[in-house]
Length: 297
Image: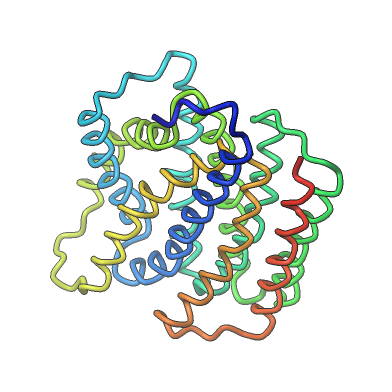
């Protein structure tokens, strides 16, 4: 099970952490483009609660199938933080933001996630990266913020503020979940967080459901399926395991690759224009991940 590790092979475990983290990032890269398509036909609040409810039902089935023990009493507060951060906060805030900005624009903000995750990794996970690590992490984030400022934030200050709030919520949820996964297990953390939110999410799904789904296209349903199954559940199975194995601050820098994958998806699937400025920022933050990785410990 995920709760056990072999202390004689720390290098192998760290490598496994980077592999799992990379898989998680690839899965998450499709979240914003899929959400962007889905909110064209679904109300963003309804989309948020429905995707969490669907994933929650699957989580209940997994926990029952594998006869998982219930979390200890002192673990429920951490699970609540995970729930508020990644089950409710990030999906809702990004869904609202994507009513104001394109997915290509919002994806650039994902470059701030490594810094947010690293900061919360220090505050909640007890990690202490080397000073040079912070230089690379801050540089990558500065490139992202600098690009947003260069655009004047005139397109939609509301959308950008919502994305910044989403990044803070997500960074906290990532770090808290990674810390908890060391004792509870990676996939168990996200499953219990989804179960914790399920009663409210199911109730809101019923209350907020539209009168008819006749006008909802197949592509919107597919996007809902993706964000429910992959973004809310499967991606976290790899991501939390990777953070726990390789370190929250270190593996968290892989998120600098997420804008690159996301921009490619936005251009391919949504036919959104990806400017040279966006590409330059993305390449810049990708370069920073190498330096941050080297000096994470």
